[in-house]
Image (cartoon, rainbow, N blue to C red; front, side, top):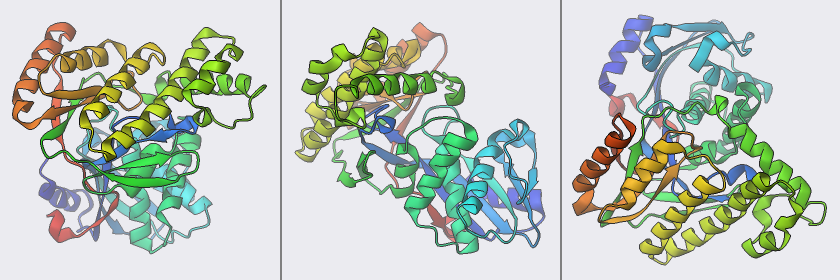
Length: 393
């Protein structure tokens, strides 16, 4: 949808003009998958696709939410004192949860508001559309009511919403990068300490291509929580002999010396991925800082193999599209991104070969899977923020 049309759509839905506009990006994770909730490092960046929220303050306690992505649901309404989870509210539970937990954190939201939301992140693609909605709600509340909530607190509130209100045990990576993202840079984030540093992405002769398998992944219904529980079990068994609080504290050598302590072989494989992927991510950041893009790409490939074999979260669609990418000329590296079980993969491809890459991978994927994939050339943009009506229209 043309973004300028959203202004007219707001007027049509609410019979008034919006006061403010906010934007929150989606994200891709370059490397470091399923390490965030294991106290490890991740290396994500924000993309220019994301979630827009047009909003106008009301004079009563009523909140009205409309999504152009779920137009069939119409306007969903609730009072500020009735922000409990309702399955029938669907997507609106994400902003509702943020409102609930912002108030629970002691901030005063004196009035309700009318809001129109539109996202141009493919829904269910694993580019973090849910965290994008949470964070756009956070910056919206901050900007509309001058709450002055620090960005890190908004990030932590949004993570709590995902964990306690929605019921998905994600780590902090998605909300963190969406809140703190910076144009043309990725973030190396230690999820245990929240220490982070920006890393410029030197892609003058290459681009990041997002490959959407169009296999939807529903995180809450997936095996995500099961994987998290398996890692917690591995940590529990290791802690009987090792003084550690997270799997992210282990070197590869320390893990291999102690993996016999983990009785179940499947649980052992899950822990192996968490440990090796964390150290792979630190090494990938080091290689990128030194300008070694080829080595960075090789670490991406190893990451996908580990997610396929040890963590078992890829599936035939992601494996097919990544295998197809590996076969193409000009590909530095490719891997799934996000939680897995469908969604997207990424590849770093030489500029001159992008068209050739998309044509070939698309053909190979459709021949094997039976339906087509979508491809996007990614640009790295800023984090969640207010934007002016003028630049929006």
